[in-house]
Length: 152
Image (tube, rainbow, N blue to C red; front, side, top):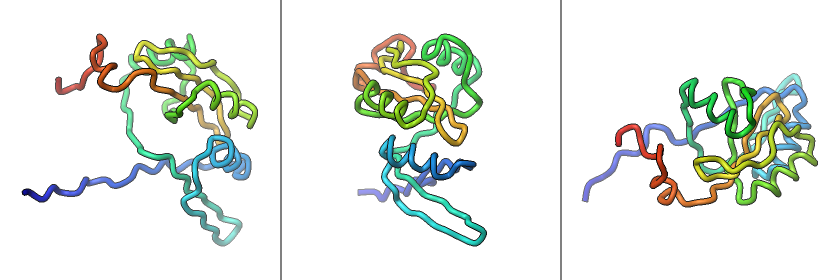
């Protein structure tokens, strides 16, 4: 038995400055449902909340892929350089809930070529977000044209 080295990174934390802190917390914690992990206050009304978003991944796309994703999800180029995506169990229901909570729809839930149901929203704190629901397992999707890994 060999001892595996621990991963060099234990957590990905995206830090977002929100001018309207209360609205951003209400949206992401209460409407989207990200559980509060911790909250801290400091001098001068400094406040931060850390919300648990489950497993994190870092998706790095070249400009052609970014353009293609915008075309598939929205039909035009709209995404800023950084966009945050959340996997949900039911993209239609979650999209409706977030629209009621103040998000603005950029594009409704759309089935993508990579077999997920994706919606695009403008959310508080100046973030553009994608909600996605996987319609097939990773194994099923890996059989589709264009899927795999850079190493394969």
